[in-house]
Image (cartoon, rainbow, N blue to C red; front, side, top):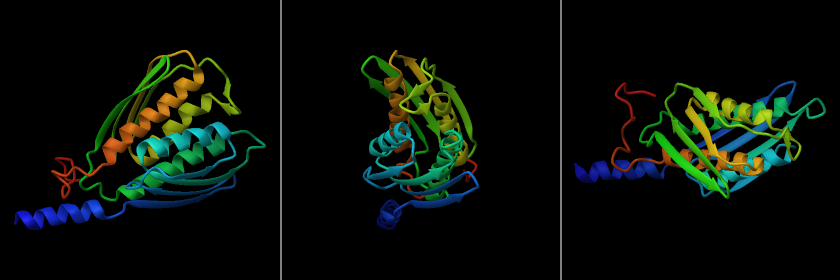
Length: 210
């Protein structure tokens, strides 16, 4: 019986958890691929340089392989591309999680970057909720409107069905603050999606579903 249970856990862990989303609207055309069991390989193009940089950080530090190809109505503004990119990545992660069997479920991380420290805590709960305690003093980073950064996190959390709390504890450099937010999310997400070797065959909820 122990051998059978061990083999079942290995089989679950060995199965690649992937998601593919193609989101097309009158405002954006976005294709996303994720592999939760990857190595942090990324290919990202959104037309917004700083957003590309942050999604690359998200992939590298979560070890989630990420491909994002987005074309949006940037001649209007960056809102739709930012929002729909967050939605599509969240939907791809949710698809890759399947019934969430065996996942650790909870994740938390502190991400220091020079003078900045950010904390992220999340629960892959199936109940989207978002808390953002981050203050930014600049209107743009590169060409990205900083008011849209919170919106990206909110869109991602809602679509992925994640309870997500992001708090910048201190910092002064806006680039460092935002990058530490994405890196903290990445590390917390890496922890939460990992298969728990002690319960790889169980859904981590007393309800029996997430």
